[in-house]
Length: 247
Image 1: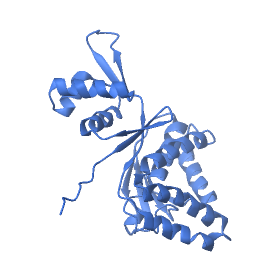
Image 2: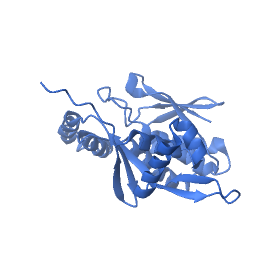
Image 3: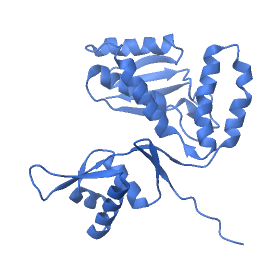
């Protein structure tokens, strides 16, 4: 009998509307590092711990693919910087076609409930992607960021307390969940009745990535100040709420 083939990680990036797949582990590591910001060759070499010739080869391959770009320092012509040009939109994963089929089979139960029906259809989008073996979490995060930028235009911009209260009211009004402030410093929120992952213990991955990106972006954009959001607990894990810490 032949050997069972090992799972090969494939990262998916989008460049000007074209999907690019990355199989090479070193390519993936370089792109992951550059997601945090521009880096010099020296910084990349130190982070990767590989021979300079190998790092140089992999960088040039990514430049040829159009995924990163090279610029020369304005203060020192000997120093080159590398920046990410593409956006990560997903990776391959173990397909879950049964979960998609189960979700679609329940749609008829929600036709008389507009909110539940739209929510079920929204879930079906990422279930469909995952059924084909595409981890949709990166796409959901991008969607959360883009929605957050637009919604932030309608929120209070100067007072953080008023901003958080406005977000709480927004979630309540649109039945996205109930948010409770449990700690002021650092700001810690409990999200009850999470419309994404409250009753999905059978799903292997956390689904609140959309909410995380949405809340973080709304606060950051409205405050005009970068904030970090950490998920300390997820309703998918058997709790009745998700826990977010914002700093």
